[in-house]
Image 1 (cartoon, one colour):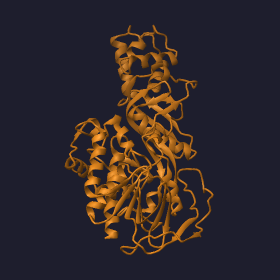
Image 2: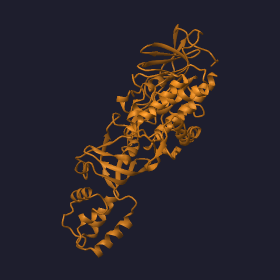
Image 3: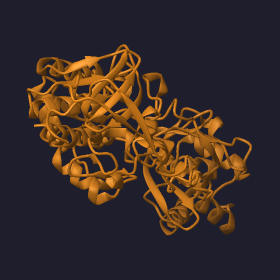
Image 4: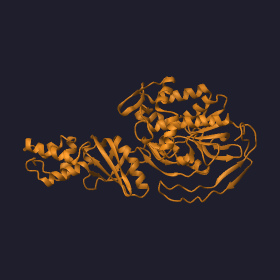
Length: 462
């Protein structure tokens, strides 16, 4: 695209068919076929902005900041449908905003190819993020599992720093300005908005996904990307609590609601290797939550949408094996033969969970270790190591922290975040089919992809 090329008023619209509107499949591994793409004939007058960023969340604000730092003379506008931008930043991390993690690697993410993710992360590391925010007056501190939070423990400070830097640089932020369509022209793009048509040379899609719709996430970016030639990997919630069938055998979640314990969760699915997640599990009245459940949810839901009938089980005594547990039980039986099975079990799992396990396995409350048969002991040990959890679904996007699915990373150049399907289009953040585990990784993906796209878009114009 030539420097300075812009839009005037839209004169004609030409339809170029690029495949059927019909979906090629419902599984997340199968993409939706490309629909009609609109190419708009335009005049050569100057654009209203050299770069328009659609979405004023973490990735959108950061992309605008990085582009403006790279080329201060560019006119850059950020459009957002909300009156107050950055709502998702404000509610993240319990209102504290887990900005990033001390250690971030491609293995912390799902969806895209690890090599491409690694390339993007290397362009802007977690250390770079910490320095960036420190220079904006928001120093970070480390908490459990390497999570980095602002020293103030206020998500508002993170958002205010981004907005303040945007203002300082001269980025134009238009709130309450909902984009309804993006069309590619001979020399740029036309964006239909709730405040009229805007024209620009380059577009950065930073629209997020579907998670936390109360913050304004509505999946509109998927429609924009599809209309500009991209395919879409079917979306599902991720980092979301899971619903459990209370009527299924051995399900006791409602009986111990509010109890937390360390577990290893395993997601089983036909034709795929099991996925194992370690962490804390929170039993709830509806099913399971907590870090382990949130990290496992992505895998269970992806298998479900791809038709692989996933199963979930919990190792309630993580870090042990069948042999080590049996040795421990036998040793206790020798030293404390009159101890009850229930009380002994309570030394391995929370007391209320031990009671629930005993009830569901029909272990008598007065059963002693001396009277506990070999078969019953081994049955209990097997159950401790692999307790079935009858997941039926998730709590949905309303309670999800992120979206899995979106624009395949293969359709974006990882060196620039530029679309391989539509010249002049850049894609960042959650709109892409990349999602990280719990712990600040999704924010780091936003910062890293925004840095790559912001620099590349500014360089293209300059």
